[in-house]
Picture (tube, one colour):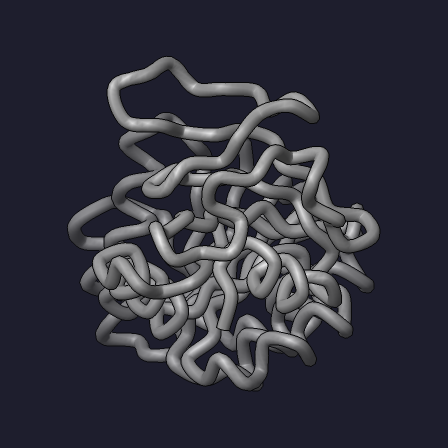
Length: 220
């Protein structure tokens, strides 16, 4: 797989190194000549000096044949522009952008970036996993289907605790896919399955139904 990375800073450096170790063909684009020289001296001719936002630079490094394009500079705007040029001018099938400001994520998705990575959101999700009263943890977004996979923990005081699935009116488009219960094999829920305190529910939901599903299973 040919992968182009824009940004040779600490994140780009380690990402380049890891992908090369996995056997991929990788090229990093970096503006700073000293940073570029450091990567080349250590890993060989895997870094090109240039501006990853410019179409001329991307054409020069063969972006048209890239399988994946990853922008991890420290500037959200640069990452957005670079991914858009790669996607729309060079038809790269998969674009991934680093986002420093989580508030920019909706814009990136609206403008067609395939995957957005926000270190702030990743840390928050891990914090949520360690806070037992937190209502819902996002696991995966299925962009093309407009769905999310979430985990919801049922507490003893949850309104759904002790109720069978048939007694719950799930929001439109929502489905409870799996129940993870202590000391038991995962349960594929049926209509007569009763939810218990401390159950971890894996559910599929449209984003707009997430709050309603949370209230149904966890309460306020």
